[in-house]
Length: 246
Image (tube, rainbow, N blue to C red):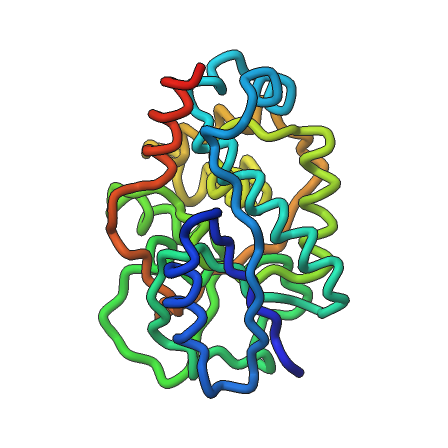
């Protein structure tokens, strides 16, 4: 089965899309498409306030724009009628694409994080991708002192439908990558894997505002499949430009 690949790409950044798409050239297992990203600075302040219920969202328009771009990708997964799709941001390098074997995906998964930030900290080199409960990646995320990262994940059609339904109630506050992680975890998971660190603290704060009836079956991979290029953050740029506009 051909796996759709949806690359979230903001207007004016066609070269970034081309660079990521080229990494799939010659691999007929994948069908690459562009998904329109959203430049946060273009969002009216009233839209940010309404969609987040967070007055401070007008100072974080970049984060709101990134969230909207990912929702575009979730809707694209549903519209594709595929069983699953690979969702990427347009600033990644593909590392272990040949190891991505759908026959080995965990049963009934909703989301599989395949990025470097969530990949467990290990030193071995397995011949095949290995999958772990995403909660077990919290210590790895903590140790890297980075965000969760929404730059690479496999999303099932069912998972996409759950996410679209969830944001109808929970709206668009905070960062989409942390939201994805939160939807995969229960309070007990945070107790087990990340109760003492910054990520665990952020998750507990987020839990207070979410409809906790929605849980995704989430995993991470080892080794990683994509790596985020550590360029200057466009989200931060859009946050700054959005503040100037406001």
